[in-house]
Amino acid sequence: EPNDYPSFELAPLALSRLSDSQVLSIKPLLHIAGLYSKISTSVEAVLTSVPEPQPEPHHYTLADTIDSVVLEPYRDRICEIEGALLQHDGLLPVTYLVAQLRDQTVLLNFFSSLLDDARSVRGCVLLDLLWSRYHTLPDSSPVRAPLGFCLDALGELFFSMLSKWIAFGQVPMVADVFFIAPTSKDYSVVETESASSTAVEIHHHLIPKGIISPSLADKILLCGSAVRVLGLCNIVDDTSTNAENLSRLRQLNVLFDCTETGGFKMTAPGCVRYIEASVERARALLNGWLRGAVSPTLLEHLSAVKGLYLLGDGGFWQTFLEECAELTVARRGNVSEYDLSAGPWQLALAEHFTETSHQANLASLRLLPLGFAYASKPLFNITKQSAGAVPTIDWELACKSSLCLVGTARLGGQGAAELLRLGSSGQCWATNRQLVARGRFSTEVEFIAPESSSTSSSTKEGSM
Image (cartoon, rainbow, N blue to C red):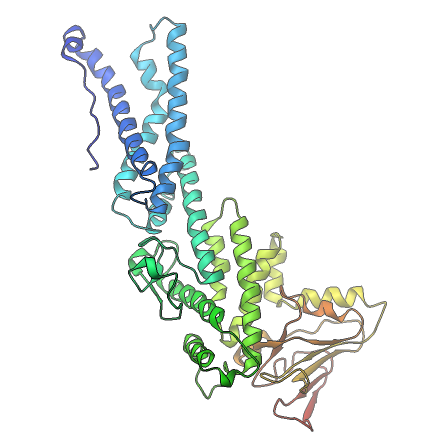
């Protein structure tokens, strides 16, 4: 119980020999001793409960961090005071001892209250509790630094769970620790169950709402669910003969909110392979980056994660590459903001034409139509006749046109591979409305209709 800890009092013999003022001066030391005993007892109970019953990982992490950043420094401070007492033959006044422990008293009071509140909190909501407490503290508070260590430790645990979900579609095997969990309450059989889009659900009471909104939680659920389905899709050339794969692909269609008559056919074997490969690269990148973070800044990580939810929708691919590009490079101040506002191709194209201006005058980018094989006619060509102004892509129109990642680019011209510096090289773009960049190119652009096979209809857009 919260108040079930030793309460220290002076013995009757001591009370009879001390004045009232002396008793009052000693009481703060008795209060400090009681707080320390309460916190150390609570921490020890959690840390020594391994392996049975298994402690909740967030509470175990919090207890371990409190032991190292609160209790150990307190014990060290007591040893220093004992050394000072020995040097002065134990004749230091009680008020001196109380003054020496003033900061420790503030710490012990705060963490005693925090542990009381944490007893009724489950899972990653504990992170929400610490997050709210941290931002109410003044900058000069002695509690701010140790609470920050606790917040970092819980943040690393939370983002480890989050990255495993986004990267591999895996959830913790302990109940009530993460806001995404298996629908089955028997966690012993989760490993052997067939993981599908319906095998997990959001536990809304476990969402740390001060960090993740309910709508963002739904999008994170979608991202990991898609990875689970893709991981079970054993893609073969003739998908139509594999009933199990077709069933999985129908699940994926539901996840992506695509209709059977829509322009983006998830059952096309080629498209599925491309998406599967892209998700694999994405999850490896995100998982590696998050696990390599020493002290993660919560909101910065979530701002990077929030771009990953539009799986299967046209706008996903642009958003995805923009967000992941930030994870792979160091911050560069206002330059990064300019990169994003100008579009992810802008600087890559500028670098390419600067580096190769003294070499070949011709560099072209050929993009494949949605769902077509590599031998099909390209959807459009982007041709740079000479070094000069960099083509600008109309990203707003591109998103409205359901821009989709569909395959590997056909590149011509010396050094043209540098054109696709988008975080994952060798990818290309297409749209079911064709005119991705209408009116925005300063160079000649040729558009070829995707339905064309032997003959192609084309139009030419001149310099705008």
